[in-house]
Image 1 (cartoon, rainbow, N blue to C red):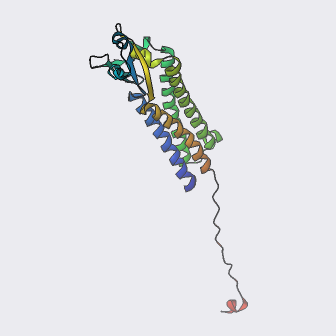
Image 2 (cartoon, rainbow, N blue to C red):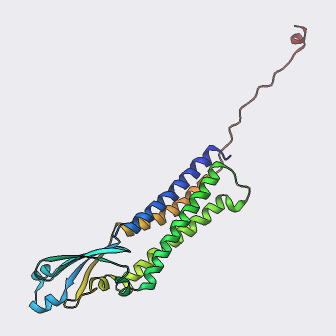
Image 3 (cartoon, rainbow, N blue to C red):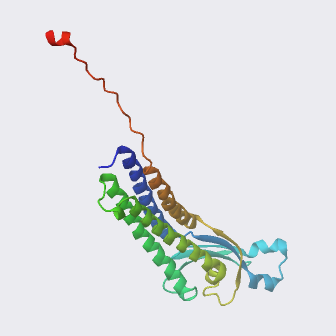
Length: 232
């Protein structure tokens, strides 16, 4: 069994991996990856609206990986509508990239659990194989953090290069055309960033656990036996 110092740090590593697992599930469930402002360009062109009047034609939108919501503002008040990515909206977005993001997140879930298992293994015993030791913990955390980072970059690419928000905003719109005027990453996106950061922190935790503690040596006094002690 490892010493108390390493046990504490391995326990912290397993806790960080488990927290990453929970964070990924939260990011998948909560539909707040990105929010934005959408301008009803058709309404603006019809009434030839000026800058002070543009506020009446700016609506809101937010979405996640499975569903979202938008509020249309076309001069007649706001109209809210819900939408789902699967099975209809996936035809409008880059389906391959969207599915890849989901697969990367599910893979990150598995890798987070594996890294947690390796940390627990090292917490309760000293593995015989080096690959199951601290090196194994670092390996699985690098893989989990790398996959998570790739999912984050892929989502950013879908937003910036594939006009994801604009495609979603104009889904099933036949009369009006919407233009995105503002985009902001929301809590689910930053939760994924926190998940990747947890695995990066685990590398530091494992490195700290390998620092050797100074041994405390107790001075033992040697007993001296004299001739007088033998006589008595």
